[in-house]
Length: 296
Image (cartoon, rainbow, N blue to C red):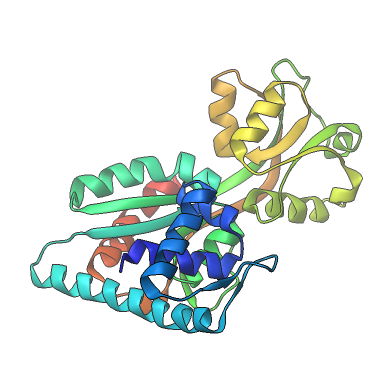
């Protein structure tokens, strides 16, 4: 049995949407369907009822899901034990991160980590903070870096860095002198689940405003999309100060107002998964770098 096909099946069973799984794995939807069909042929059973929307697991599909999850965990443990026995740190470290850590925290961190541990392959998934937490909790990711405090008490947390929010506009846009001025401006929103957006909503509330006071002209799912739309003059937006500074230096946007709204980024991992050599190595490496992140 091909374990990648089994992993694809488990993801499809969890998310009940082949398109979502395709995006997560960087594959096409037909490729996902083919993997699952091949797995069904290998096992000689149908795993999904395909006449329902969304597709649901058959009775044997539920059994394969339960046993398959245990099988993947056992295989992962077996490979870790063998590599530790050889005293070689090798393996695949599955990291999930929201958009700001992916672009502004992880690149230098992963470079130094790979220099120290060249035998560890890193697989990076970018998603919003809420989804990254869910994937870590469900063990599809080994660690995550998110822009919201995790909700699950099953996860251990390490605070990495602080960030503030800013309001940005297109180049040449006049500064905003008061937060009350934003209520009559066209705004570009982030989709729910974004740590930046959740922090903005909470910060607005503390300043006596709500999202209902703003005029939404577009709803997007990434920092890059916000920067592009703001640069094109579609509207103004809340954004991480880390991202705003770099974009302003490149004359992509103008920083209109720096806000007294702070948030932190967190490393999260399931506490029962410690004592795995390559995961412990990554966590230790991050702890060494926390002071560097705090200065940024």
